[in-house]
Every structure is written in structure tokens, then in C-alpha cells.
Amino acid sequence: MAAAMEGMRTWRGLRSCWGARPLCSAAVPLCSRSYGVLPPPRDEKEKALLHRMLRVDHAGEYGANRIYAGQMAVLGRTQSGPLIQHMWDQEKKHLQKFDEILAENRVRPTALLPFWNITGFLLGASTALLGKEGAMACTVAVEESISEHYNSQIRALMETDPEKYKDLLQLITECRDEEMEHHDTGLEQDAQSVPGYWLLKNVIQAGCKAAIYISERI
Image 1: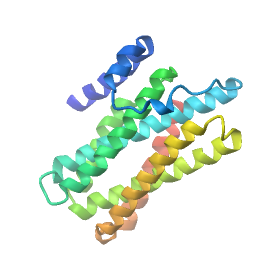
Image 2: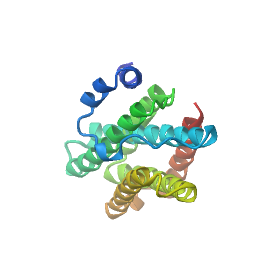
Image 3: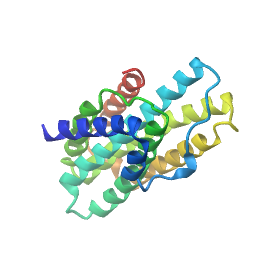
Image 4: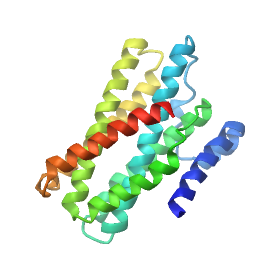
């Protein structure tokens, strides 16, 4: 219940940002202003594309934060705790940036934030119960899926107008690079040694693909 309430508070906070942008700016002071407001789209089709893109990116970063929260709940006091915390801190910065961009451009976040709140935490905690290797296997699977998704967005923006969307491209590229850093860290931390690694990875990535599809549309 507490996790669901946290998701609802995030949703309400974003809604308040739409109607009171100065309050939103104060709520996320660490957001980089260099990404600013997106340039006006050429037409409704391009606007819809950008809104889907931003909505799913925000949902992905929100889910990643909840996964690391679940991992820290189990492994926070172990030797792996500082490493997981470092990756989580980077994800927090990603989420702050997308919080700001959604608010500035009045993009509706996915209605499923409360659901991703719970499932993300449970995924992180349950895989961490398998030990450090289980948590790292989850990290590899999730970060690989997110990186591939970011790559597809980079290609789409490059084909649309790379100069026009250079700030968004910069943000997505920076996030993609850090996600790949997390992916590589997971491999270095023996992710592949967990029993049933390939099955676990495939199941998690199937869930990631479903989450991406749903979050773009709902």
C-alpha cells in the first residue's frame, strides 16, 4: 500500500507541475536547465511521437529507480551496497531530468506509475534475494533493454531533425551511456554466474518490452 501511495504522489506532483511550473522547478533543483523546453513540433503527428517518447522514457527511469530501491532494501548493508547506490544515484538524476521535461512540455506521464512502482521494487528485491549475482543479472537485463530502446529513439530523432532536437539527443545519449555502464558493471560483477541466468534475463527483458509498449500508450 505504501508503494502504491508513493506512485500516486509522483503522479500528483507531476500534475501540479503542469499547472504551477515555478513550483515544479523548485521541486527538482538538480535538473539540468540545458535541456530546456522542446522546440515546437511541426505537426500533431510529431507532437504525438515526442509525447510517447518522453512518456515511456520517464516510465523507464521511474521503474529503474524502483528496481534499485528494491535491490538496496536487500543488499544495502552488504559489500555490494555502495556500488548499487552509485548506479541508483545516476538513475535518480535521469528521472529528475525527465520529470522536468514532462512538466515543462505538459506531457502526461503513464497512468501505470503506481503499478511500475510496485513491480519495479519487487523485481529488484526478488532478484537481490538470489544474492549479488542475481541483482546484477537483473541489472544487465534491464539496462540492456533500456539501452536498446534509447538507441531506437536516437535513430528516430536523427532521421527527423538532429539539429532541432540536439538537446534531447544529448540527454538520451547521456542516459544511454550510463545505462550501458551499469550493464557492463553487472557483467563484471558476475551476473552470468547466477543459476538460470539466460532464462532469468529473457524473462526480465520480455517484461521490459511489454512495459515499454504499454507505457507509450497508456
